[in-house]
Image 1 (cartoon, rainbow, N blue to C red):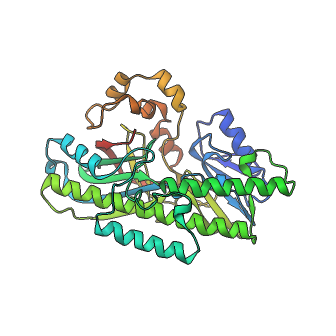
Image 2 (image 1 turned 90 degrees about the horizontal axis):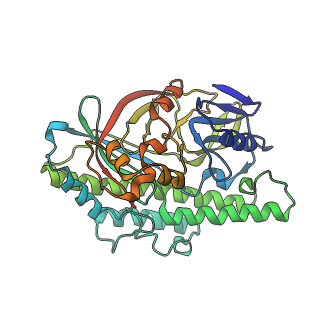
Length: 389
């Protein structure tokens, strides 16, 4: 761990200068208590650094939570081992691609599954209870429940160190969460402009606790966090169904973990109650299970938190980008991607070149940096990968 400033601690052994400068700026905000914790996978983000843990007292920065509210991971360990899996993995990949709408803006044609209806009923009741009309943000929010999205979101079948089969996926609150976040980032900017608040970065605009704008953001943000969690559960149900059809055997859910890595919660740290925003970080309180994915083609990890107080009981959420998407497309080729994905069933397309493992930090370095934050329980290697364009 390195103390970069009185209010910034870093666990990143590889840290670009621009990322460092951005984190220093965030940590200089007057309501930070006691410090920002920079995770090993830190990289530039909107306003606040992706891979940072930001404790705020009496205020919250919507952009520090991020635009994909509640984004995170879910994993299920099944009873299967590698020997139980049929040889034709392409058949499973294509079935999953049909069952789960992929890519930005994708949605279901209709709500046809009972478990989808049940989850939507819960979300509708919760929305009504806080006076939220999700359709005012995203007309098709109901049809996007159970959809993946694009970028680094994925669905995978993986094997652990004992060749046990895990089902693993990564997604968030889709269009409705994005629109909720954008609205409140804009509200915070207007509020700061109206009140003459000087900001080092306009994306660090904040809302003051105890105001209607703050309360409205918290209500809608927490609803979007639950949407994201249920979205992952919905996709996992569909993945399980396709695996059952593929193997001909009911899936037993031996273990299940579902955790956010873009969210905020009220927590208690260093003697004070704060709003703790984890922007690209997971909760790593002592004994808490968590998930840290690598990039496509590399290892992912099932971990348990060590409860390190200086890190604000947090840990990294993945590898973190080394190359922007544009730079990655200019640097790497489809053949490079094929080499990186050798032995993994995936959709062979130019669309995923910017997701090549070489565009990300070395996940082994990230995990070494995080050794004081989490204990690794299982190391997973992919055998099937599904992504959206």
